[in-house]
Amino acid sequence: MKKILLVLIISLGLISLAACSEKGKVFTFQGEGENWRASYEITDSNFSYTIFYIGKEKVPETIDYTISHNYRGRNLEVKNYSLNEDGLIQSTIPNTTEDSLHQVDESISVKISWDGKEEELILPRK
Image: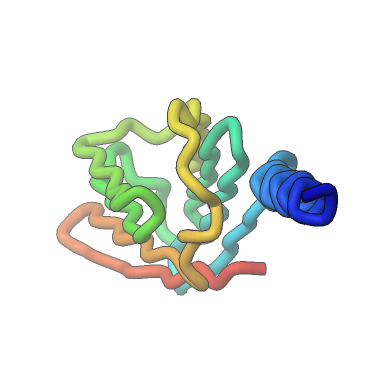
């Protein structure tokens, strides 16, 4: 009986350690295309991303962009976003669920449309 109880306690401890091992994990994705550079970060507490215009023409006034990945089926779609004069977008979104970070993809897609042009960036996980 003592052996069964000991095995049960050890098993529960290992399960608890595995569940807590995701706390503090950070997944970073980065990529660059001809006109845009982007990064995306997933933590247990938030999602944050940066999109930066690196093209040779004037910084577009507005863009549409979509960030897609399979973690929580998350797709973020933004229309007519006004860029600052440096062509930079930075945003942080709270992660309000306790979903497992084990579902994070190896890459994230960022599609950007501006002035009749479109570019897709594939951001590999670093």
